[in-house]
Image 1 (cartoon, one colour):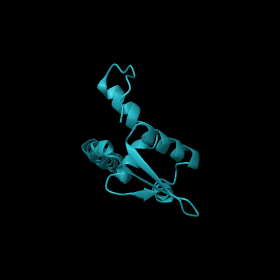
Image 2 (cartoon, one colour):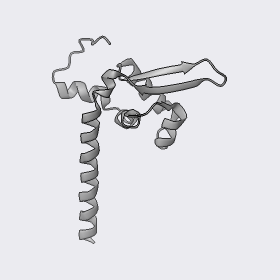
Image 3 (spheres, helix red, strand yellow):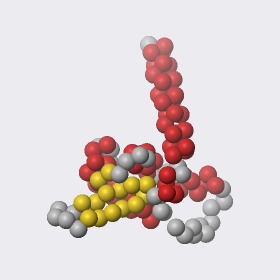
Length: 115
């Protein structure tokens, strides 16, 4: 994977640029230990439109974070998986998941306490 000089002024800006799309982090999370077909990914993210999911997958592939393999069968079979470089995001995704679980737990407790 080539790393273009993209003019980022901060490493966080670069990271958010790569994984900060509407569904990018969720896609990466689902692919962390799996190879999934497009329809399987879409089932895991039912709110994502076909257009948005396809766009996010293209960007992740372009950025070298996921692999896309198309099998020459009818109908076409396409599978997605993390690249070796994409797998290096595992600790970040784990931390995001832990933080989100904590946030949801805290906000749920707050709602229960406020009623």
